[in-house]
Length: 245
Image 1 (tube, helix red, strand yellow):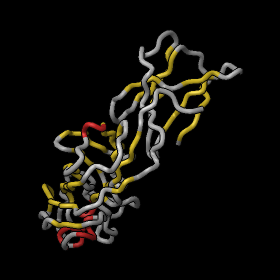
Image 2 (tube, one colour):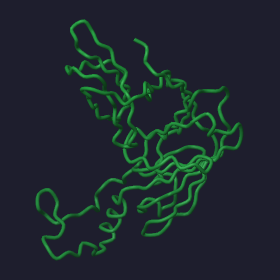
Image 3 (cartoon, one colour):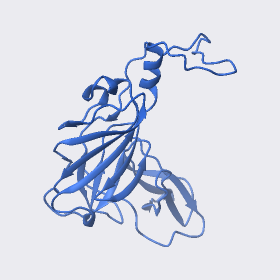
Image 4 (cartoon, helix red, strand yellow):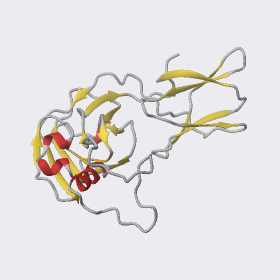
């Protein structure tokens, strides 16, 4: 979503607070003839920001995190190496694939009952052309991911959009090394325990019940997707202090 949003507040400045990254930046603003402030927001699906209105002061910088022209997606091609790091009931065998899908469909039988963390690695060359920056988009992730590029840690992503900004200098012309640690939910592990009749619900109170207060049983749950599920892309971008009207 990219649009000018009317805000009926008379203030000297407006700041955007990103709840996931902790970044704070000035918001691009316009004031129309009705004295209504228009604040420009650029939010990808699943994105969110807090808008803070200042009465007397601004942050002191005109810079924003507005990135126009994020349209030329460049999927990263190559063979992904997937190694399961931790979790249970046992680690599935490592695998190699040129496409990304739920590890319940790519791995061995153990992958269908596994819950935990897997490491995806890929070596790739930088796409042609220079850019002011690059947006690395992991696509659909189940459920959280930690990203490292050429040894540089880009942090943990816990909710959509699963994207990080990469500077031009962080990409090498050849042989870039991307590492993505993906951690799943426990759903498939719980499903497997109940399918095998393992007595794992040992608690001292009401114990586990379903929505109808009947004994909880996950044996008939469908398999939950896990891992990286769609192509990972790089998109060239150039930072701009103000968006086009």
